[in-house]
Length: 259
Ligand SMILES: *[C@@H]1O[C@H](CO)[C@@H](O)[C@H](O)[C@H]1NC(C)=O
Ligand SMILES: *[C@@H]1O[C@H](CO)[C@@H](O)[C@H](O)[C@H]1NC(C)=O
Image (cartoon, rainbow, N blue to C red; front, side, top):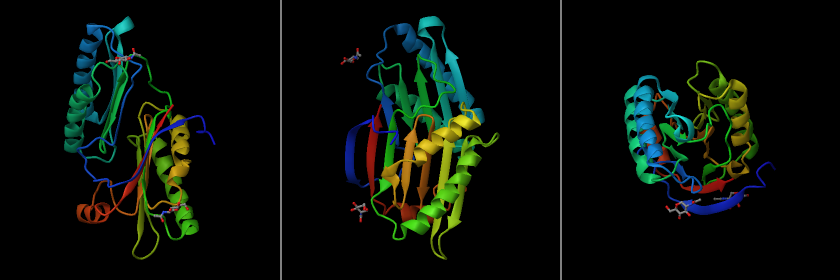
């Protein structure tokens, strides 16, 4: 398949994944992107301030700071379903953490459950980037793959279209009843700099990950888009009690793919 040229870096089985909006879901501090001048460090600081301000207002910002060789490009986005106050605190924290986690790097990316932040001296706006990926899958398999996959495919077809639609804030969510007692929840998300076509292309790549095959829940996280599905609610408006009860007993395995 399309990903055969990616090297498997880390494959950790059966991590007990404790659901917390406070811990990053993924991070990338590109080792081949060392900061070369103090000017860039200054520009990153100014960029982060700009990003936090704008994203707190509208949930999304793609902007630059500086000129020529020291110009930095930054993008920050909250998940489109996340309430304003959660968005603001997520992005404030992310802007602080990304500098601590990725010191001296000009290509840094940090994913949280509720928000995403990224900067680089290279312009990455409007491009699909599925080179680096972090995947989480519930270790448990579904009992009836045929029925499950049909329902999942139909649901994610809808959430993908919603995420790519203008005015969606980059996110599409949906749910479908598998039985009287079981409901499947799905979320698709693209960074808002992508065109609808590129968003759908990115989501199609995410959905094609065999790592997720027949799993009760899965997440594929790329720089340009991500998908997630679970047998419990995890997006807003959130039934917190139901979400907590189900998610706290889930065991995940994870996979990091690097270009
Ligand atoms: C970047 O800097 C680190 C030390 O901070 C060094 O180990 C590494 O080799 C450098 N990478 C490149 C590509 O220069
Ligand atoms: C799930 O299915 C895969 C592939 O058939 C198998 O290797 C794995 O052991 C199964 N996992 C569980 C928890 O039953």
